[in-house]
Image 1 (cartoon, rainbow, N blue to C red):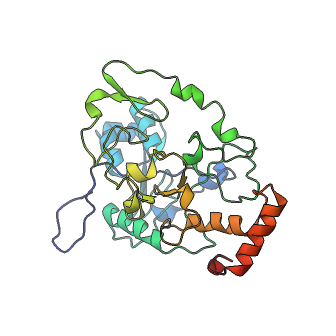
Image 2 (spheres, rainbow, N blue to C red):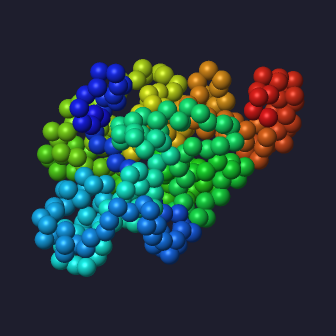
Length: 306
């Protein structure tokens, strides 16, 4: 992803896809809080009607970092009195209420790179992942780990009552047209010409239309996702049955947990290991629980997870 002129002293991310920046408000975030206007953050404001009279296009608004929903409203009705807030650097947002934590002189390319690099600075008690919040009744038993969206309809029950796999078979009933490719997991349809067209760009959510580059029996899949914020890492689902999603696009073979040799770069696997080694609720047989506890006491190789 290269913006503007090339600089021979700059490291660039080679990217064949767009990198959007989107933000979803928290559930408890009030509209009143978002509507607070800080004049220092705003260079000027102007109505849609005035923008239209000056010949400003929707594309120009996008280039000025205007929110997509605002641009869509402008496209539908550019004669309204709704205000567009032109933010002063480094602020952005519908009312200039946000800014990145990085140097204000950074280009978007540099912000993306720094965001990716910051992922390596993780601590065991801090989770740098996303949480799927649309299954409020999902009970995970001893697993306090937040449910990742990639664990929905992945063929493996993660909620105690199976809510995460409910009605998933309906996705597999989808059929595609003759000129379309049917993705393996979920039955998504894409144009047939998109299949086998590039190993650098995926169109199926499970990337099944392209030949996999990873070594077949590699324990950690998508290893480079620790460095890149791309569709393959951020938006793709699991194409590896029974694999553990790290939450950043990487997948760890479930049979490998716990494993010191192959680890999620964001250390999400350690939270699972903690649950495995501190709770025995997942072991039904009492004698097996006792044997496992004795084995742990005699082998302190996993002491760092305590």
